[in-house]
Image (cartoon, rainbow, N blue to C red; front, side, top):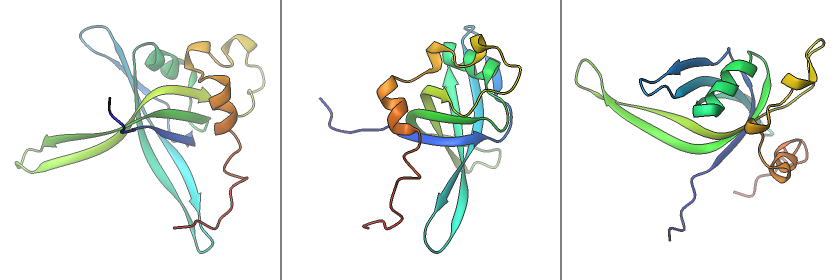
Length: 143
């Protein structure tokens, strides 16, 4: 049994609507990026995190996620390697999501049935830990 752990959690806002494609097997793949803010005492900024999800979760993401929406994403860190046209090795990193939860308030006029699909929600205990924890953190990082 391995003692390694590859799990990432983010809360951010979508930069654009997800792009959903279908593999020859019929499985859905959705890709999108979220903007995740960070702040220290001296400066602040935004990181763009590339997200991919597969299967039913990809279909749900494509149907319900929209530009500007705030989401909680949990998944594993993945680096892809390929060779470009000039023969140079290239790399890209992304998060392969296994859980997505829509955050924030429901837009006016949206029916309660489309609010949060059950298949995309993490367990209740994870959702509680993930929402609101950043505002409660101390800015003094011990390392």
